[in-house]
Length: 435
Ligand code: CMC
Image 1: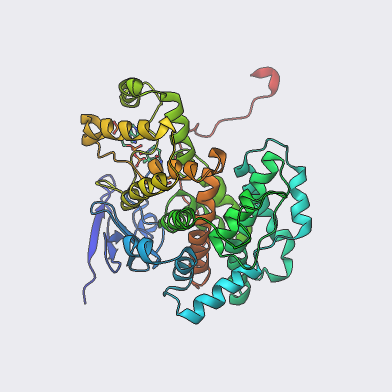
Image 2: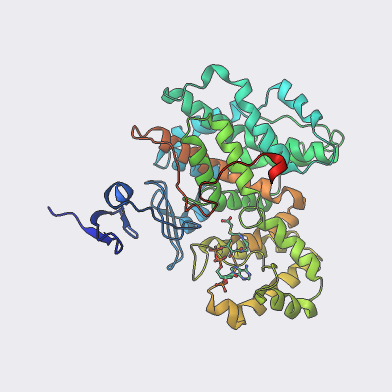
């Protein structure tokens, strides 16, 4: 059978090459340009990866025009409605939804790994008292490799699996510890009788004299449901900036804890995971509804770097399906935990204003998942500097799944992009007194 190809011609040299098209199960095909430089002496240039597929992956599929997001083929709406976060983690890591016994043993194993080493707990004391929790997340996640030397043979599938399990299990413990260090509270150990989200809430909010969960083990189901949902929605998003960072770091053979720490660093930026915190700061800065037009004008002004945080997405150009779900959850959560917070009304007014604005309509800028997630976290009493950390907890599932997928492929090569050099051509060194 003749393979579909795309012909590229260098008009300067007249050299031409037929490049094969690669098709996935669904979605846009990609031209395999691997031989381009060898054949016609040309690189491709695609700043920001606007048209470049960086890998093959069977984990997550997005159709940005139709607002479709699938994890292993399952629509995000169905998973959000019916599943638990750990069920989704199992799905992402293993490719299939777990049977009842599989889910039980998976959840039990995660619980067994949820503690952090006492020496690592003490490690937190080295951080400044007002360190941002994200800075602690980067450092502590990276340092895990120092505790598990003996299980870092990345050619051993069991070593890889256990490393991934450890990161998913420990990330809520590390997250809660980062918060508690920043407010000067004693750490709370994980409890084996609680599920993933309950445990996190307990580690975040229990005080020595005041337990978050009462003696009947009651914890508000609306809060747990909302947390579970936000974790599911943020669990994976194919080759986003942080996942691509994890993959690039992994391509060098670096250990998985270091690679995920690199992913946490990439997530921190306000264009990515830092957006949920930035939305709340922006709302506070806007302050009142009558100032919205002023800020919309700033967002449209090309000479002003200000952007409307929580709006726009590289891939979704009609709507973000995760935003539709978080918007609904926002109402449910605020009904249960009524808030006299004026920021909620301000958020709705801003949304309405921007959606009617010609600039936002023309550029297809819609609210993304993080426009609403911050307000939900705020209603759950999660502090603002923890919003991006919440994203880290959820996205660790995606990072480790991509890492496992990548490590299981025998044809791995180091990721090494090329460049268009714009500096000086060769020139001679001059002694310092002659310059
Ligand atoms: N406010 C005002 N203008 C915007 C915005 C915005 N939030 N987003 C994009 N634009 C404009 C941008 O100025 C550009 O205009 P022009 O064509 O005249 O130069 C056009 O829309 C296209 O923007 P872009 O920067 O080329 O688009 P991108 O795909 O590179 O960036 C984005 C996507 C998400 C980084 C960007 O929309 C943005 O900065 N949004 C605000 C930050 C945010 O909410 N991030 C969370 C993303 S969802 C969570 C996650 O997955 O991490």
